[in-house]
Length: 299
Image 1 (cartoon, helix red, strand yellow):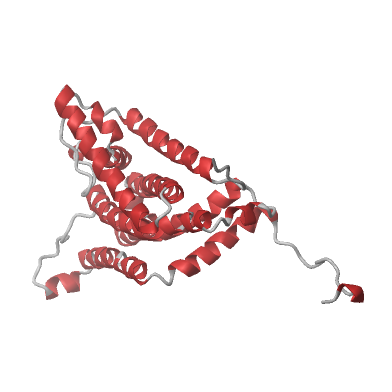
Image 2: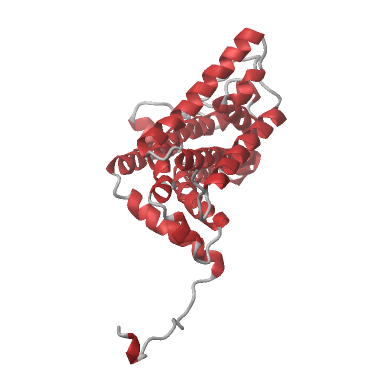
């Protein structure tokens, strides 16, 4: 409008609460991810195993179905910590694939298009930016891991009774906290690699390389030095050890989850596994913090 008309004025409508302003980032990021067909397919496939597990629990407690398929009135599969650890192991691999597909597109486009100054020029802090981007993976991976896991736990508790839930409450804790350990590790790695490796396809490959190269390097250290401390850089080993401890499955101590197998006798003290995972997340956060800034000095 022409300035001389003097009809313009500042915005005086309702303001978004300061605590929820970061939610604008996941809203638009999820909309962009929805256009990725391959990512959508993997998300849909990730619900197949929870449906199968739900069917198994239902059949276990339905005598008519057991008789129909010619099985005695005994459980088809024992619903115990190993069952839920298997479930979490499979879902964790699906979460890894979803992270590899969706994670690289979180930060790299903003850096490539020099959009960070536009974000941070508004009442929007760097911490809120990181939290907004991380909340996208928090949501997607939660829907794939601990949410269906706790649903299965409640379903089994519904048919087995409150006493079963009370006796196996550690399973619920293992599902929740074990899932969040995996979610935090994947999210921090994805954000850090997305910030430093700006090409999306390269960043997706780097996530896999970090896991497999670190595992191979750790195994080489163990063989050359006749030690077990090389596992400190093997993320799969660390997560598997933490999961086994959370689920309290001494019979599977040293075997980890289904996709995180550990050699018996090479276990590390559990506190070192926790410290190593915290160190990995802290390093990723530091690397991310170096890149997330309103201005960039170019030499």
